[in-house]
Length: 378
Image 1 (tube, rainbow, N blue to C red):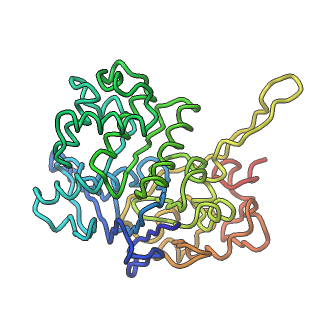
Image 2 (cartoon, rainbow, N blue to C red):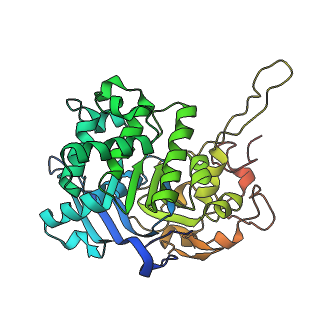
Image 3 (cartoon, rainbow, N blue to C red):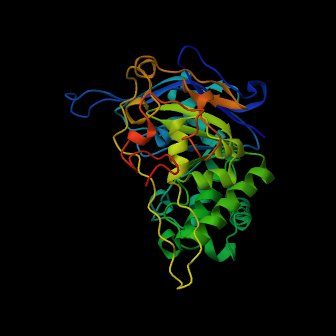
């Protein structure tokens, strides 16, 4: 299974198979206008390409502000009024950005299911969860009455909700966070979508429930044949469930590769930093205390999207003058795509201190813990 993604820098590049795609995104750009019309526009997504096949899981990862959620909201048609979208989004054979608004909403509603971070905020509080799913079935599949309720209960059961007939009569506030998220997933499946967009769906849940919800989503991909786009800050979560990972930075895709290969040997310096910042498992010492270890810190702010050169260059110890002046295109790299002029010079994980790498600024000269390179600190 594979999914593809690229950013348009010198022309689009993709590693996926568009002739079998459930979702094709080309040169997607999202720009926010200042609400008071006095501030500058903000470019949140800067020309990305994605291709998804049915039965695939693609995870978008990156720090806050990298453009992950803006990408999903653009695909779902849920951006605020001050946002503008350009590019091409093909779903069910239609370029939905080129359709009139009513037709666009109809294609999106049937073709895309959305699962939000906070199920309590996405479920209507004045409707029982059964009535909420019944409404989706009526609008998109024409089911009503007893037929709709039977399908609602079947969807809830499929999503792991015990005693679905009774739970269908409950209001969202009467359910736990984990149950609310299962209900939200059932609602997302109700229209029979080809693609499910999940925006940080486990962030508000405890670790055990997180694992259950992720297992549910991955199981639905296998059983229902839908494509799943999962947004997460947690690279470890992405590696555990995704076929491919697309790392976003400053509105562009920095690296998009099979999950296992990306984790084993990252091709972009930003991916290396993210990988190093993942919380490691450490056994307890003889006194029963967890072994403490300070995580590397990636200092500095993310550059604004659309600037000159590589957006990561101001925070990258491997950056050259060429990196700062010319934005690297996404190019083929070890089964995927990487946008880095020096990708081929990165050493085998976990050591970027290898003699194979000769950064213009020696790694030893950088303040310890200032950048997320493994083993760089004292």
